[in-house]
Image: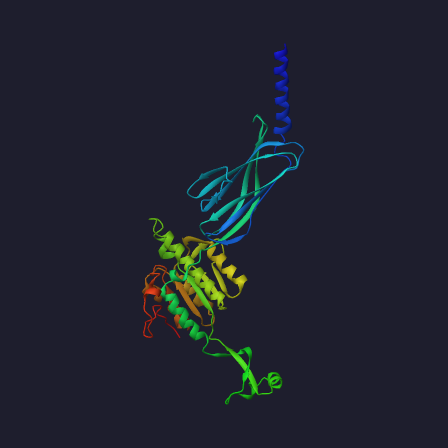
Length: 377
């Protein structure tokens, strides 16, 4: 009888804990997740911060969180309970035990190896009683967006055509005086027109001063990324690295030009999760806009390079420099660029497959030909 009573009491306790703890195990559970920043470059180290709180008066003996992440995410350290790695996605599993009114914050160190626009949202939550007789599950929609920009290239990785074009562009940029750009004042020189005299500076210095004007030569640049030829090699496994290098080359050119104060625009012929065309602009916010457009590119051709450049010709914008990043045949690129050339635009061709060491290996000479082979006015 004593043994029977003990067994009955144990059964009652097990049923009671299953009803009290198991049935309401997910009640009062609040979960949030975020990255320590919403934008980064490929290869940067991030922190994924998970916060889970038990707001009820009963404990949660065990709770399992399952999240799906792209395979490009690499978790570092010992904070990951379990990882199931796939070719496209991976499952990240975390385990918790929560006392009443307890909040737990857990930090995971992550490296995102590839660019992209990631909208991570779904988390699957499972909990139950002590012995697992009653289990409850539900999914949560937790928004944790992340934009990973393309990796930027070092100087030694840039093709010689970029260095050659950049030097020529810097010279052209300072050829003409711009009457709307005033950079201060200077002493009067014979031949200066009277309408340029700065009377305030003249009174302040006691000598005749004229306005010092800035220089410009229409410094706008449009970067064109052709994804068509590299996509053809994706099926054999040879095109992805070349495509990513082309995107990184375009991103590096845009970043360098924006840092120099040059208005830059961007257009490409790939499918995208972001904008297919960005108008020329400058400044830090515009830099983020350009890099986000490059982060969202998918390696799938949307239209041909010729169709993209014909669309640019229909815009009929003021003359500027078009920098075409493409692995296509040079004669094919020049045929596609003829409508822009006839409108007075300058054309530069950068090939992502060019030898990156050419810039340092090639001796400097004033007679060195411009590998960009620029055409136009």
